[in-house]
Amino acid sequence: MNISSYFKKFLHSSQSSGIILILCVAISLLIANSSLGESYQNLLDKKIGTDLFHLKYPLSIWINDGLMAIFFLLVGLEIKREMVEGELSNFKSASLPIVAALGGMVVPALIYFLFNHGTDDAKGWAIPMATDIAFSLAIISMLGKRVPLSVKIFLAALAIVDDLGAILVIALFYTDQIHWDYLGLSALMVAILIGFNFFKFKKHIFYIIPGLFLWYFMHHSGIHATIAGVLLAFTIPTNISTTEISPLEKLEQQLHLPVNFLIMPIFALANTNITFKDGMVDGLFTNLGFGIILGLFLGKVIGINLFSWIFIKLKISSLPDNSSWNQMIGAGLLAGIGFTMSIFIALLSFRGQQEIQDAAKFAILVASVISGFAGYSLLRYVSKKQKQK
Image (tube, rainbow, N blue to C red):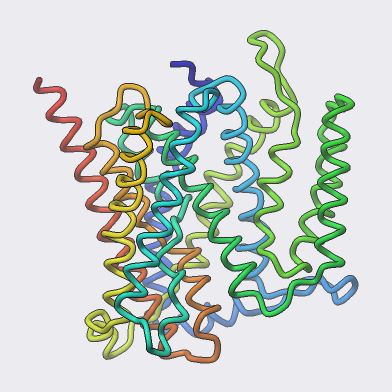
């Protein structure tokens, strides 16, 4: 199995920053439920920027749409490298995360729909479809060598395909209006970036400047701006040489530290400020709560492994190297950590309905905690059993 040293560094950094990330979640929850909660929310709602070119947004938007685009840029770079010369470089390995992500979107949405069809809450059907790539990777990375690198790569690829699917769903079903002029300008930026790659431009500046414009146009088009990071990543040139460092590899090295130890902790602090209220626990035992919790906790692992099993049996795909179905189940459970994108979809689904939004956010938090704990515990248990054998 050929796994790049850059992906190993990425996973090592994720493992080191995982504890910091979870600590930031705890701090954010404590602040949100203390006397500082209102001031903290006001800070996140404070608009920053300039009205010139319509670049004045709340701080939370700059974090979720701006800083997260950099995170998606790094993950996109890692996935591209593995597609060129690593674990995802052959069709059988590369196809598995795609079909698994599809199953992990379809089954949770179906479970939610079964609980909520015919009600006003039915419009939240996409809430349990999403996987939080940051938290799922942080947890699996904390397991270190107990989990094969191929399984970690599988989860990373699955999560990014899943998030791209969620972004597409948002664009098609939860966007009030798509601005086609800005979308056209986004396509023009992508074409320019592809041209620079084709003519072998190697300096990062030729990609970063159009990438900034791509983010701006994508953001104003109505489609979630973080997709700009992935599109930019796939245009950065790389090679299969073991002696010459490519522009892609250089950028990876430069992004590891700020992404894992600055961007992700800030992201966690900004997105876990859920204020606990009376009656929220009761909301878990409603059709809305069941749809979200069972969709994320059961729907994800069932959908991912069912679709994977079908395509492996058809010999279209293959299991990750040195992995087992128990480890695939563990990865599927970790994919049930919906969190950020799920919360984002919940806010879009129930605009102006604060009480339902809060109930959905709490259900997402509970489902994500259960999924994360179950996935971590199963993968750790499987590792112990393998050592005993």
